[in-house]
Length: 402
Ligand SMILES: NC(=O)c1ccc[n+]([C@@H]2O[C@H](COP(=O)([O-])OP(=O)(O)OC[C@H]3O[C@@H](n4cnc5c(N)ncnc54)[C@H](OP(=O)(O)O)[C@@H]3O)[C@@H](O)[C@H]2O)c1
Image (cartoon, rainbow, N blue to C red; front, side, top):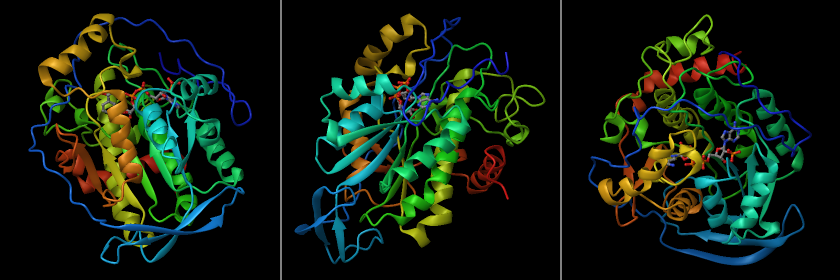
């Protein structure tokens, strides 16, 4: 039923009232996320060969950690040039309370070079998760964000600005996947939940925080939107039905509300697995549209990635128990596309901070030796015309259109 799901009540800034998961009828129709790419694997180019640290300065919050970084003069990218202040970076990670977001937070925090803002809808869960992986209290903070409510997104952006922290890297990672749903559920504003959360929530968040990101003096500012192989129909996994397809975007234009328009972007019948894949196409198109519009003027690196099939995460929580039981072994021994949560976290952490991954507009993947390479997106996921239309329609839906 439309409007069945409402966003959790917001308490000032950081508290959350958890909502209950619901039992859902199950089918085995979608056995996606095989994690197999048909592309040849090749190692990405390395752009930075040397980095020297010297000097020390006091930080905005009083912490003395900052250093002066001298980049290799041969570096061509606009992100690192001349002398820059290397203070502790601030990275915001959405959905850092489990899975990929959590292991990325951990990987960055334990370097001692990053303060991680865990942008999560469940404050207590995030707190426990951070503790469970041994993150030190001074290396992270938690701020409330429910991407299924645009009010919450606006509130988060406002709270973050007020916190006085710089924003050096934003990672749009959170997602929901509802492969067994028979009927659509909806965000607080009435958008189909998968696209509303994974795409529209992140679209508004990244747009609202963009000026903040631009103002950062960090040597390499980045906006990363996690993609997926399942949205790319140029892969084996992307060809498992139902395939991603945004069509002519008529459902998005109609508001995805299941009332006077379809809940699906292409205007078709509701399919929870497809809605997730479509949302991932939007994520990858958004990253590229950001790159086209803003990379040259801002020097910000825009990137997406497929970290591998992390078959054990909570992403599959709505799938039937049999699928959840068999999927990790299937990925490990049959497709060999499996990666552990820890390895996937290291991969995303590389995209956040590695000096060899500053190229903008790239969709990163990793080969079986865990070497990163620039992967190719499907025709639809790299369609510039569609990206522009999707951007403009999304602006209208989240209230950013002039
Ligand atoms: N697992 C894979 O094989 C795989 C493969 C390719 C790409 N990915 C991508 O990796 C990313 C992370 O997924 P995962 O596998 O780590 O799944 P996960 O463990 O389920 O993590 C998803 C995170 O998103 C959060 N989230 C969900 N709805 C939210 C909302 N309305 N507001 C704020 N946060 C919300 C969850 O919060 P709660 O903890 O409160 O539920 C959780 O922290 C996703 O973008 C996914 O598409 C995953």
